[in-house]
Image (cartoon, rainbow, N blue to C red):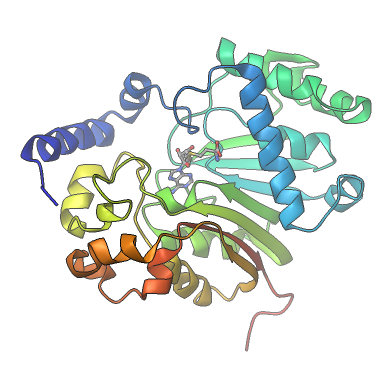
Length: 305
Ligand SMILES: C[S@@+](CC[C@H](N)C(=O)[O-])C[C@H]1O[C@@H](n2cnc3c(N)ncnc32)[C@H](O)[C@@H]1O
C-alpha cells in the first residue's frame, strides 16, 4: 500500500482540528452520524424505523409484545447521532426513559432533523403517536426541545454514561467500532446495567471508506500513525471480531447471541495478510473475515463467582 504523504499530513492536521475544536470540526464536516446524501426526511425516518425493528427482532420480541416488555424500563443508547429517532420510538412503545450518551455534541433540532422527527411520529399508530407527542417540552412541538426526564442527552469526552445499575437495556448501532477505548465502553455498560439487564449492539467492521485498493487494507496502517491521523475524529478504531469477544469476556456479561453479518473473501484476506499492522498479526483468518456483527449480552442476576 502506498502511504501517500499528502493524505497523512492532511489527516493529521484535521485530526488536530477535531481534537482542539470538536464543535467546529463537526460543523464544517456536516456530520449527522448516518453518512452523507440522506436528506429526504421520509427516507431517514424509514432508516430509524428499520433500526428499531431490527433491535426488537434481534431481541425476539414482537411489536405487539413490546409495550408490556418496555413498561417501566430505562434504556441507554450510545452514539445516537444528530437525531434520537430510535429513542423516540422506544419511548413511543412504552419505555419510561431513554438516556443518550455521545462523545461528540451531535444532537441538533435544526429544520431538517425536526422534519425527520415529525415524519417518524406520523408513521406511528394512534396510541404510540400520542405518547411520542408528549416527549417534547410543549406537547407535539419538536422545536420546544425534549423533556429531559424522558430523553436525557449527555455528552462525555469518552462517551461513557458513568451510571451504576441504573438501566434495563443498552443499545447501539454503528457506534462501538468508533469508540476510542473499547474496554472502557464495555466496562461502563456492565456497570450501568441493572442485574438481569441486557445490551444489544450492531457493529460495523468495514472501513467506512478508509480503504484504498482492497476492503481490508485500512488494517495495514501502523497503530500509532492511525492514532495521530484519526483518534479525535471518531473514525473506526479498527478492532476485529476477536477483540470484542475478549473484552466482553472480561466484563462478566454473558453473550447470549453473536452473529456475523457479512464476510470478506479469502482473497481479501490474502491481499493484506502479510502486511497487517502488528496489533492485528495474531487475528485468525476467520475473525479477520467478519465485516460486522450483532451481539446480545446479558448481565447475570448474581455476579460470577
Ligand atoms: C456512525 S454514527 C451512528 C449514529 C446512529 N447510531 C445511527 O445509526 O444513525 C456514530 C455515533 O457514535 C458516536 N460516538 C463515537 N464515539 C463514541 C463513544 N465513545 N461513545 C458514545 N458514542 C460515540 C458518534 O458521535 C456518533 O454519534
